[in-house]
Image 1 (cartoon, rainbow, N blue to C red):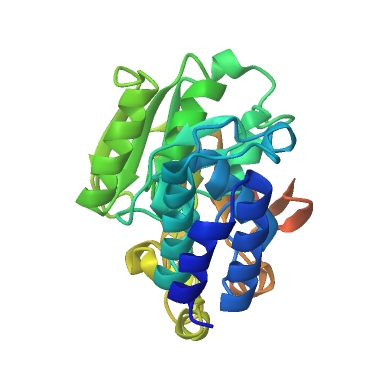
Image 2: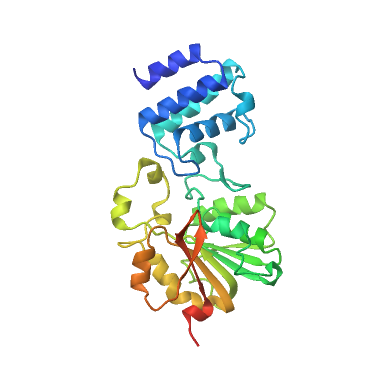
Length: 304
């Protein structure tokens, strides 16, 4: 039976949140959707989309499962289920929101959906590498996209001024909205720049970056959901390390003594260590693994 036929029957025969949840999970699995933008499976994605559409708390599905819905509520839920299946857009682009822990960010197709492991580290204040949050006075988020990591930097280090840099003017428009939502305009500066090019003379106590790091082969086989995201924010060149190389080559000149560089590189750890055997990478535990995010100090990058 076609999706349109199933939707027509659903409008007549489904009445509760539980009904719609089951229907959505079946349709998502049948369509072979890919999950990797905030959820990892069809059930969690369906629950999120249903709760969001019905304006219910996102962390409280159980009390509402057997609630009967108005016809217009059923229609709204079926519409977003249909959009997810037919467009293959990540759920975040349909709801225009993404979450990193308790932090909500506006997103659309001008930016990638926030999902950096660095967010977890910032919510812990970069402990134990930073033992006094008040001592961090300047911070930089390279490849800021939606501005999420810049905002988390400002939240983690209340005395810091944060520069948020991106090459994409469209991405910076989204970041501007998020910075305003958190009332951080006085502490977060948005700068259009190709990495460090527009930052001459600036120095930072902390630099973080979630740069493009998908290699050319992986770019060719990305699931449809990822193809809705800006290519500029994903493609890292033939081996995925084009932007990372530039960051490593230049970062020391923009760090204060004792300053920290923290960069996410996806699944490129072995490739990166082979390319820079002289650098003493410290791999940070994030997302249950020490494979994705490295730390270097200014002195690691520029030995005395």
